[in-house]
Length: 102
Image 1 (cartoon, one colour):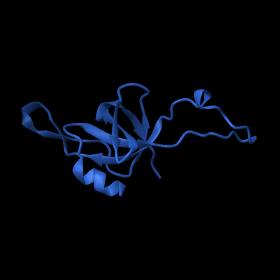
Image 2 (image 1 turned 180 degrees about the vertical axis):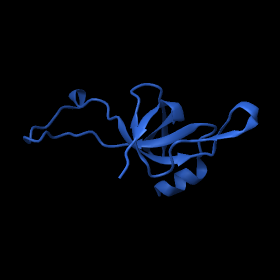
Image 3 (image 1 turned 90 degrees about the vertical axis):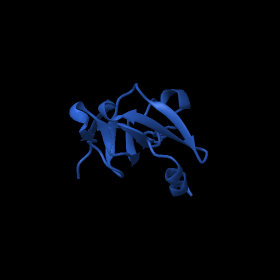
Image 4 (image 1 turned 90 degrees about the horizontal axis):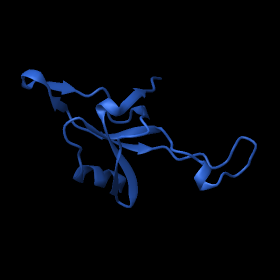
């Protein structure tokens, strides 16, 4: 069902659609954390991208990430998008701090 939403929505230019990882609600010691103290999760999975944006000379600059990449995000610069009752976020390619490599 989630795959259907991405067929209807593709980011434009240098935008990247990501799905954040779930926040940890239990510590290693087994203590349940309240919602306010969980913090913002800065790790996500890329779910949709486009080719890139046109730079100088009208040449398309490719994005640095692709679908299924695990990335580290900036705390700011996000736009929330709700697709099929699930929260996703749009980030510019330049707002992604890095990607995890296997």
